[in-house]
Image (tube, rainbow, N blue to C red; front, side, top):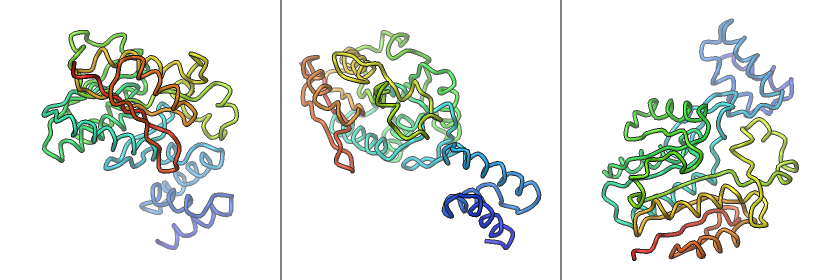
Length: 278
C-alpha cells in the first residue's frame, strides 16, 4: 500500500470506519492515489458512514465463483444462499438431468441461477435458466451480471411468480429454485436497521395460513409442482421458524422425499422436495 493510500485508510478509520472496511474502500476506489481517487474514497466513506451497506458502496460482491454487481435494486448475496445453490446442484445431479431446465424464481441479482448455470458448465452440463422477478430493476441487474460473466443460456422474465411464464413449459422443468421474501412484516421492524437499505419487497412477505411472512413461500411451493417434470426438484430457502409449516405444505401439496436442511449456523433454512415420478 502506498503512503497516500495508507493516509486514506487512517482518515477513514479516524472518521469511524473499521480498519478492514477502510482498507477495502481504499483498495476499490484508489488504484491511482490521485485527486480523483481521493474524491472517490471520500464519497465512498461518507456513504458507508451514513449506514449504506458496504456491498452497495463497493458495487459488487463475491458469490460462490462469481463476482456480482449489486446495488440498491437487489438483495445483497448471502452465505446462506450459497448453501442453497450447493443443495440445488446436488438435487440436479441426483436427478441425472442431462440438459436441465432451471427456474430461478425471484432472481434478484441473478446470484442463484447464474451460479448454477456457471458451475454446471464447469462440469460439462449445458443447462438453461429462466430468471424470473417481479422487479424490472432487479432483472436489469441480473441481465448485467449474465453479460459480465458471458452466461448466455438464460432468459429473463418480468412476472409475479409463475403468472406470466410460458405455459408450454409446465411439466418440463428439472429444478425450481427460489429465495423468496419470507420475513414477516412485524419481524422486519426488529431486524438490523441496515436491512432498510435493501428492497423491502424482496425481504418481506405478508402472513398466510397463520404463519408470519409465509405468503410468497406458499405460492412458490404450491405452484412449482405444476411446472416440474416428474422427478424434478424444488429447492427453496425459508425463515428459521417456518420449517414445520413449509414441510407440511410441501407434503400436503403432493411432493415426495420432502426434507428440510439446516444452514451452517444450525438454523432450519432450505426445503428440498421432489415431484413424484408417477
